[in-house]
Structures are given as structure tokens and as C-alpha cells.
Image (tube, rainbow, N blue to C red; front, side, top):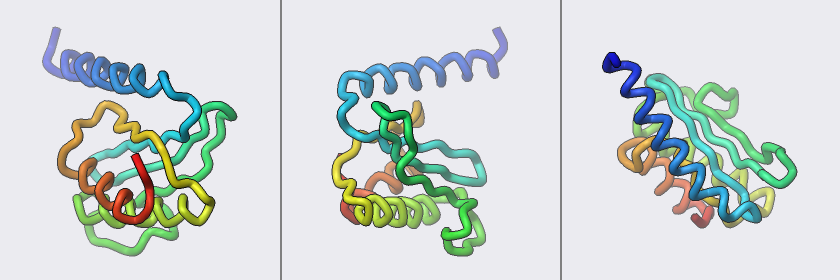
Length: 121
């Protein structure tokens, strides 16, 4: 197997391990994140109904203009905005779905910012 295929297999295993832990509590809403090298995406999902309640990304029109939208500073701003939108809709408690990404760097900055602005997970 080549290195790229092994990397995808490892990432998929991490992702499924995180998803299986989240399946135990379907009553809470899920804060799901995804990222690319240039952008960051977050949404709050109700798994029982299959609806997205709040979504935001660095590509949204509501997101402030920044030079680099894929760095830690952009992740902090996105965490603040999505937490404010969630609190406005009376969403306080969620389960954090890091989607296979390590809890480090951008992901940690996003989570800390969301917690500071009213979300509990």
C-alpha cells in the first residue's frame, strides 16, 4: 500500500472511532466540524430529526473578511460566531464531533472559543 492510501485508512479509522462514541447519546445535538487547508466549517445537527439547526463557515457572507481563513485566528472567530448563533436559538449543550481530526491547533482553538461564548460540551 502506498503512503496516501495508508493515511486515508488511518484517518477513516479515527473518524469512525469518534463517531461510534457519539452514537451512544442521540438526545443531544451534535456540533460537527470539518476543515480544509484554506477553510473551516461547523454545524449543529439534530440527529433525531436529521436537520441542521445552525451552520457557519469561513466562506459564509456573515464571516468577517480575513486574509487567511484557514488558520487558528479564523477558527477562534468561527467558534465565537457559531456559539452566539446557537445561544440565540436556545442551544446550550452539544456533543463535540471533531470528525477524526486531532484535538490540537485549529480544532482546539475553535472548541475553546465556542465554550467561552456559551456552548457546553
